[in-house]
Image 1 (cartoon, one colour):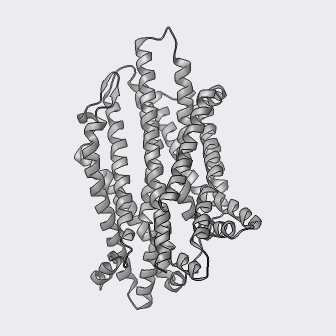
Image 2 (image 1 turned 60 degrees about the vertical axis):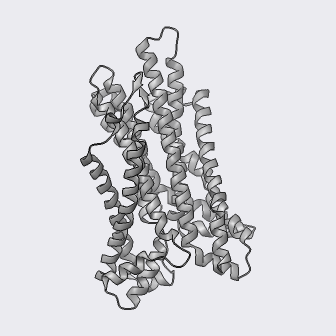
Image 3 (image 1 turned 90 degrees about the vertical axis):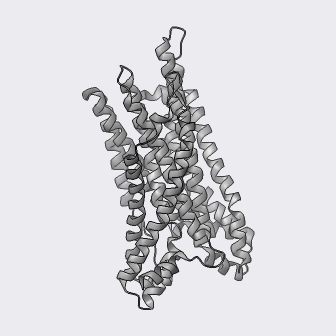
Length: 440
């Protein structure tokens, strides 16, 4: 029975091959980016001179700023088209398949899709390693040998990604096993509690306090570890509080809705604040990184001068290179997160779109509601994430660098570019929505 169940899960419905393809693509992107980021950062730990500590501190911060969001993207990849899989599994449960049979098939399915994506990501990483090795630091390219991870390290990264996939499948399976009829009838609700906001505030306040004192009382190595951990915790807490913020914002918009698309947009967010957050979480991460990039630009401007030594000039150039690489990585992550999650959301809500079409609602109204449900929370998401990052950067660099013109311009440009990526993705995925209407 398990083999037949597995074959059913892996076989998409007619015209819905993207249901299987999207998780593979998402896991491929996550694997390639994680390997690239970790591989590039490892080269800094081979240096042992007087400047090595500073380079390693900057590399550790950049690593956390990129890897933590990528882990979140991996979790989102594991949940792609989860509702459609839940519906199939709940049907099988109602037909008498045992919980063990459903569970085994689901875990194997998730593992196989993640493994296929991870293999693709490893191939992409190996193919791009020569280009990454050409990036100059300290006046010379890093070299392919410095950025290519050892086989065991690559296996460890892939194993971690597969563990995320399997863990997400196990967690998602609980609701099917407990209440298959509720899932099938779509009566399950996604609740987010205000306690999330309390936890988020506590974490940010605690991180601010630690960042304020640690550089004065601890050595460089300890400070690097603590700062990297605190930045990672702040990024993680954004994913915790984000759905609650979107729920509160959508509730207010629902009360003020005066058109069909505004009403539907608010209901889309309230139906699943967590899914809506995944649509815009990339912007939250980009805004968080934009503050670091902006203050980095201001810091370089302050360091530039006629009396600068050749070593300091090389450091400024390398910081600029690191900022560019970090921003490129963040935009790749934003594009992957937004594009994949939007496409997955359309596929998951195909039946809803068809029902609305049969009730007489035109495609333009549904598309407008979909775009509004994505674009409306962007401003509050971007501003809130930037403020969290500013709170953490303030004890290290002060208000002068945070509010310097170069810093503010850089933050504004990065946030605007991220919002532009989201807007473009809503246009690019419109044909997928149109096909679901045509099939009605």
